[in-house]
Length: 333
Image 1 (spheres, rainbow, N blue to C red):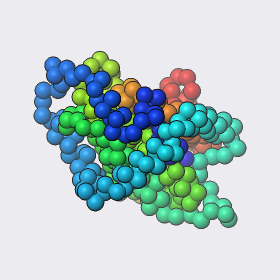
Image 2: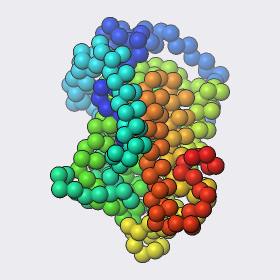
Image 3: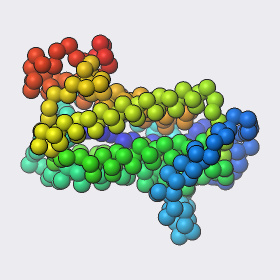
Image 4: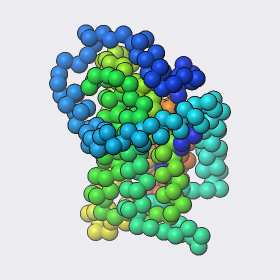
């Protein structure tokens, strides 16, 4: 199952705790020094940022949304921020526990090739279920970003990272689903668990991006490394997913699985998971907040065991044809 982090994770940094939102934003903003020489000179990035945010942000930025933003701020500052240390520890512990359970084989994320129906939870259309659980992420990250947004320029760190998030989930929640030749059914409990994860993950990251809106985006060595990791990971992830869709489409059966043998599939059988892990690690490097690394932790704890299960599934289905290929890291695991 694809986890996407919960609402107890929407917590802030220690310097924000204990004061009202406006004063927190001012304190955060006053410490930021802008070095104009480090800003990108080309207008393309600015246009891309503005366009990506407008995809979901134009409606949410209307005055009619102000009461909702106020409710979000009040809820977070009243119930989340005062207990941030405890909630962070609980969220990390839950991720580690999920890793242990999934690795042990006691539970398997029941979607895709590992789908199993049962008499307790109903099943729903695979494409509908996937789209519903994933679209939550871009919606909630924009909601929390707008609720906690500090004044800043178009090329603020918050806006640039928000744009990257929306680009990723535009493909993940919409484009890849529409282009897929077929998706197996999903169980309702799997969809609800993923929605729960996305609420927390996107909310927590969106909270941090709101404050980072006061910081001017700069092409420092750190951000360059993060951008390269993010771009490379996204490229591996998307190309691997679309390759699988392509060979299933050619087979004439959208839900039929075929042993892949292209690119990184020659060395590992879950390069899409490897790429996604690299992608979010790069995002965390640029974000520089606990929320980003919590997402990386959950990504590893979820996708690592699933990649192992995928390898076992391929060996059972295709036998010796799998050869010496590993699950997620070439030559290692």
